[in-house]
Structure formats: C-alpha cells, structure tokens
Amino acid sequence: MSRLEHKIALVTGAGSGLGRAIAQEFARQGARVFAGDRDEAGVNETAETAIKEGGTMSPILSDVCNKEDVASLLGAIEKANGKLDVLVNNAGITQREDFRHITDDQWQEILDVNLTAAMRLSRDALGLLRASDGSSIINISSIMERVHVRQLSAYSTTKAAIAGMSRAMAVEYSAFNVRVNYICPGYAETAMTKRILRNPAVRQGLLDRTPMNRFVKPADVAKAALFLASDDASFITGEGLTVDGGMSVSL
Image (cartoon, rainbow, N blue to C red):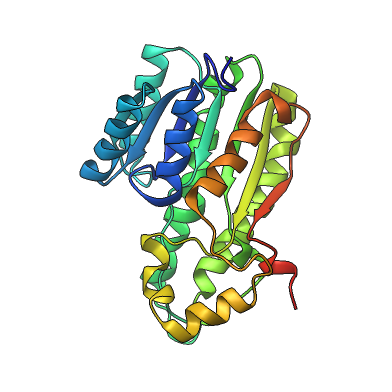
C-alpha cells in the first residue's frame, strides 16, 4: 500500500519548486492532493503531471494572503471530503534588502506571505484537521532560520518565526491529535534561488560549504515531507528536519 493511501492533503505554493515536488510526491503515494497557488499555469502544470502519473490532484487558483481565497479553498476540501489529513504550508517569497533600507511595505509583504498566511491557514483548517484520525501540519522553514546571509534579513526573520510557531503550535494542537513539524531546506535550485546561484563564485562558495557537495533537489524535500506526513512519523511533533547536505553544521 502507498504511504499516503486514502489521505487528503493540501499543499500551498504548489505551482513550482518545492511545493510542486511535494504535491506530486504525495499524489504518487496515494493521497488526494489539493494544490494551491496564485500562478494558475504553474499549478495546472503540477496537476497535469501528477494525473498523467496516475495520481489524484485538484489544482486551485488561490492566494494564501487572501482570506476569501483561503475560505474557498478549505470549503472545497470540506465539501469534497469533510476532512484534511495533511497541510503543507509551503507558499513563500523572498527579496534582497537589508535592515537599513527595507521599507514598511516590503517587510509587511514578506511577513504576510511567509508567516501570517501559514498561521491563518493552520488556524482556519483546524476543524478539518480534527475530523481526521490523526493529522499533520508541515511548515516549510529554511536553514536561514539560523544561518544568515546579508540582505535576506526579512526572509530569515520569517523563517525563524515559522520554526518557533511550529513548535508552539505542536504543543497546542496535540490535544486535537494534530502533529506539527517543520522542514529546513538548504539551497535548492528553484526559481527563488536562481538569481543567487547563477553567480559562479557564489555557487561554488556554497558548494564548498556543503559536505555532500551538491544543492538540495526538490525531491529531497518532498521525501522529507512524505516521512513527516506518513504514519512512520506518528509520534513526532514539534520537530524540525534539516535537508541541506550538512551545510548548516559545516565550518
């Protein structure tokens, strides 16, 4: 039997990168996946690939910062299934700016997308998560929650907050048989990191700091999410799983 057979999963930011890989891996493992993203073409492509591989996936155009979109997304899941087994809060943005120059609007935008949206969806989905016989929330943080780079100050702040929120939520949600964990990926070759990794010197410098000598593949993060979503992790909550090839512990 597949590891997520008969489970209902929601993955945000599923139109590309890590979210796409997670959504497609969940579908391969038997889950019925609701894939949300504000990029309609991207999320449709994610679903088309999953369906061609024999999976079940419903692409839904949605913006995690839009309360009406979130309500509509959860309403569609409730109508179709009446429960939610796995929620993956993956949607996120980044921007290069340091504390000296960041504007209030820039700060608020990254806070809204990376942190507040994950809180709101986790809160508003609790009724559906409680309807499951043991459910799981997986929040996507980053090694940037503890390994910092200049001009990624706002991004690092939100990812550290995601880790702290996940641990606090794990304590509160345990009463409802809902596990909450988080993943800290290293540098993955996705659209978000393209600008950084196209610089040969920066690229080689990051590889030199990575003991396993390669960048994170989206599939690496998808496999970690699969473990946390599966019954294999049924007694794990409040934990962070780092997927970075050893970068964050390397000198």
